[in-house]
Length: 326
Image (cartoon, rainbow, N blue to C red):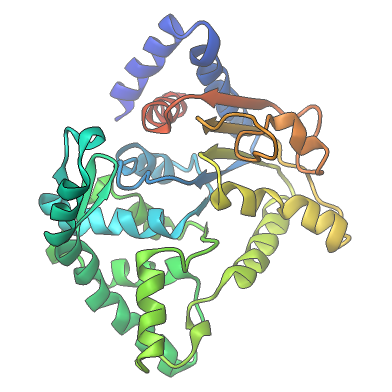
């Protein structure tokens, strides 16, 4: 990975000299500069980055200590595990833009859930994990435990029960890398995910008694506040955002929450970069320029700020490779 990363960094420095390409280089170098002075980095992930197999580069970033926390959607959390155990049954759809409604219905009848050009197999991925994770939830429910969504997946990974089902190199799973280093993960709106839906179904059918067995959004915010305050005692934290939506909106407001609502001093985010294809329009927070965040008490006027207007499946691995090579 290091040789490949070095080659990619050299390519970027040679060819990426202007416009969005130059911004990608500047944002990558600013990330490196943040780490060089002892600061840390929070990564936020929206979209379907796990199904896009971002883990191939993201896992190495985690192993090498370039990322210190992740805020992601429930889909990104679970879809890395789905790909881990069912990769061979995934189906790629080359002509996905031209599918008719009838062709989509045919995929549905085959138990293939489409994400852009990739279909996640219902039985091999979702139901396989369901059978294992429900046991984890039930055991915690009976013990009166309440854990964050990712902590149950960490338990499942660490138990070794998934190993017989691996269908990719485990080094390409960012969740395995995260479990190995006990990386803090924050998952707002977890109920908006396949496993979140399955959990509620098990509660309604009486198999799980306490809805709080999996901690919800408010508990997640409390955990994030405590983590942020602890991690910024002697350093600062940067913010690297992939996409928009709740994965980015939820964690970035922790600073004004601490200062304005908790009424305690808080350090601002020391760096901000977003890979986005959202346009800036009336009321569009996902497409808002970084300076707007100054008015909300999230960034300072001096914070390094970047927006890379491009496809994250192309840009994120390039940025990660640049950081890994530095």
